[in-house]
Length: 234
Image 1 (cartoon, rainbow, N blue to C red):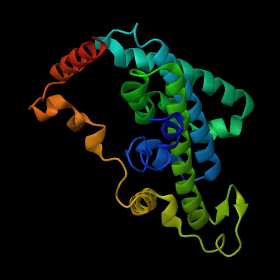
Image 2 (image 1 turned 135 degrees about the vertical axis):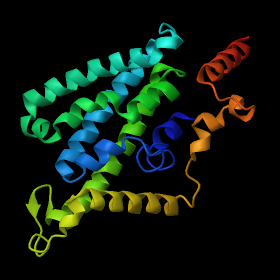
Image 3 (image 1 turned 60 degrees about the horizontal axis):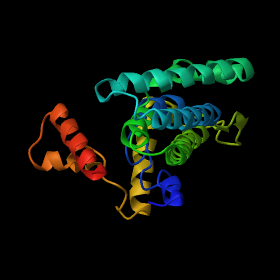
């Protein structure tokens, strides 16, 4: 995969929100406002890029058995920095995001890229992967927020839209409306890609050779992966 393909894959083919179905909680919770969604997207992208680079640089040092706790510690450090910066310079946005800003620590998008990509690739490629996935996450959450805010509140980034502000579809700002827009965007992505977007079998356990052999144990799967790595190096 070229660096350009690595960068662009997160926009549609492997969009973390609309294809991989990761980060659903903050996507649904924050996507009632374009401003909040954009802030969440930028914050998550910054954390994703920095954590990918750090984890890639430390991938040969972190023991495999405690890699997930180590990833969380690294991610938590960058999330704390982003929180403090936002609290200092964009306090209203910091308040709007609330607890969901702190929950970036356990965002499946960031943990997933750390486990699937950064722990297996170099620093530069991991940074590019972080940029691409961050852009994909941001575009998806902002697209959802634009639809929900325009039709649910009759505003766009706080500015009132004639007629719509007087006749809002209030359900769009609730959970059912969020799920409706989420499903709609997933259907659009599937249509645009002609159903050729990556499937879960390509990035989950089903894509592992051990799974085809009947593996149901995580430790056995990890052992097989390590054996394959040693064989490849040899």
